[in-house]
Length: 157
Image (tube, rainbow, N blue to C red; front, side, top):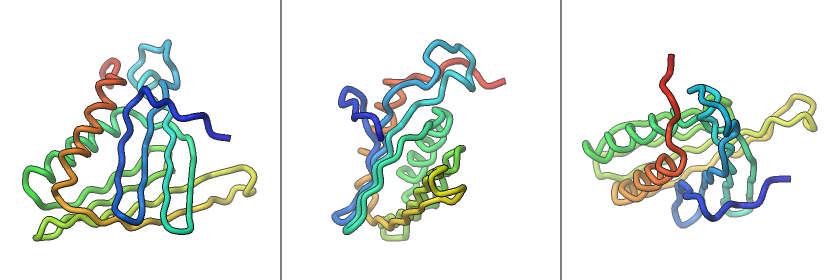
């Protein structure tokens, strides 16, 4: 069973009229650690919905992944072109964003759930979401809000 949503923390939302994926950071996985790699894992609830489908999993996201995603989104916003491939280190989420010459963005979202109940198998949900460049400023702001709520601790060695 997934933990309840913590509405006190910001969320990251990729959506269109038909489908949505929400990353909602809940808490630090290792709140007492001062080590860069251990202290920057954030327990994150990921919800995905599309007509006829709903997925709800909780997995750790490393803040370095969000810093990288933010930089890529800002670059796409600045040049109004490009392709972003963001894969969570733990393998449960992949986001691919491709912007065409007209500023339309096609997101391909692959969500995986690895579960012992599936005897080592996985469940997958693949979504396609379309929006445009006007969506990017709000998305960058959402990532910024998460990084402000959960600042990166330490430096990688």
